Image 1 (tube, rainbow, N blue to C red):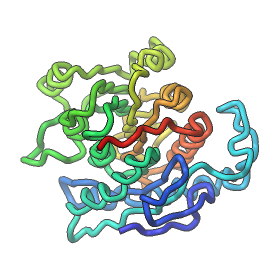
Image 2 (tube, one colour):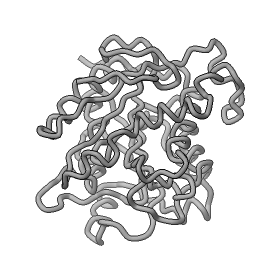
Image 3 (cartoon, rainbow, N blue to C red):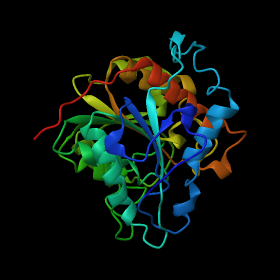
Length: 314
């Protein structure tokens, strides 16, 4: 079910038992989620390995004790990353639906132990897998960074494809605030999806809002009374930052704007989990998307070194 990867992310310790993780974070690749068509099973499947390779290519693995000017202190002064690399889920394309069950068997023990999952997903049908383990355990908020609101109830009878993750996440009773950030242009949403999202209490912050009013104002508006799960579709960022996506849309968030949002949660110890999706390595340019993801993770690990543990409910 779990396939080890070499090198590990940041040269971190590896593991194959999610229940045995002792570090604050766990790094995990999930190659795909429920799909509409067969091509989705491979489009983003090796994203996690490309992120691991990016950390090596940019010398972050060698420079663990060096100063990170993004966070204002050394990355890991003792040279030890505060995460365990669990490798990748091994998807079976002959039984692709099983990946939801397999993801639950890995993510469930992590959430119960208070470990923060850092997931590099496949297409955007992966995020509900990360939210599911919080059901009945902890009330959480959701920050979606994406060019699209992904609030279709179904497409061709399929309710769990990449156009529906926020709709399915809204179905969980543990979810309170759901904030969409970076939305722009034309996607799968029609009037009915926008109105349904607003009726559900979601907040839509367009990319225009971020550019005109500033990412800091958006970050400071996030309710910090609960922890947040971040669902970051890479097309939420501008193609100049993340070209390795299937839906290129100019006008997305910059690296700094995206990081301001993530760092606000990490700095205040409010990050419960994060999943990066829709990173398609074959479309990347000079490894730019993998590099951006790597730096964002480094900043999270440095700003929220010891995540707040939530005691398991009986």
